[in-house]
Length: 443
Image (cartoon, rainbow, N blue to C red; front, side, top):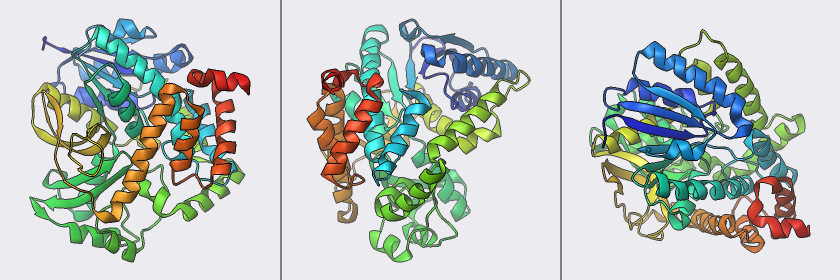
């Protein structure tokens, strides 16, 4: 690899970008980034300029020789890249608000990566990422595409199944966030803890927890049975798990499992928020406005601590650790979204899974875990079915496949409501769903 690295971040105007820049600065000795290109679209020009200028101040303050480039020309940025990260939101936060509010209107959970909201975020996003995959194969065929865009499982599934570019990895901050939290609850250094993760993105389980190589799963299950010591994330209500449920499950659920195991409680809370207009999307919109006001301050040259309120803690660690391990041929273990290749034997070999991988210069190699425990395999299979059909709908623009995907998802409660909700969401989001053009024209 040539001296110095070129990284391209598509969705560079994201509020998360300063954390990524901080991660690159911290690792400059091991990861000498020569050029960082922040790319966005015309609608994101203002945010790109605000975030980009903050990134330049951060680099200058740190004294590292990294050039930061801002552009709306994606192809220009991609040429000769070594790593491309994607963190986009097609339709911006206005679309997320609809993804959350419309399902609630029909008495279903509204969430941007789960249920009907997750389906529509995926269908808006996948065609754009497939375009990027095609451009990368032409302009930077040796580069790694590292996707952070949600719903990461569905998106990685589509990129692996339909994309032109084979070097694809999906990344999520949830596994590293869980590891950090459990280490804190155990009162030990995070380096001593290894969690054996397996499943799908936002549907991943900790099958075992090792402390200095010895299982402490029973102790962790005790911790998770304590209502005062919960593993959650800022964007998910920290509803306590029932001790008997955690014990019988026998593995560690992730915070997103609350949507599936505590559907009624979450829905009740969302219905209350819906009445007052304070869904998570509206909260995030307010946080974004406050963050960008901070970013505009020309005296600010570091990542502000308020960014952690946004829900992206350890985002830069997940992304930068992966890039560094590939670049340095490190051979360490990270939890990533990759092609299964038999790692989870009761899921299709060619599907995307979230599992521990050994990361070298050849990319991530998934670690085989065999079959999932019977207590969790059914739900994982159902969500994988949803992701597969949703990815097909995203690519083909098939109304029937979109309806099938929505109805398969356990957070959508009836086929009649599914059709009504699908029709309304297609209409609301039609600007960003050109693949459904003929159907939308008929309506």
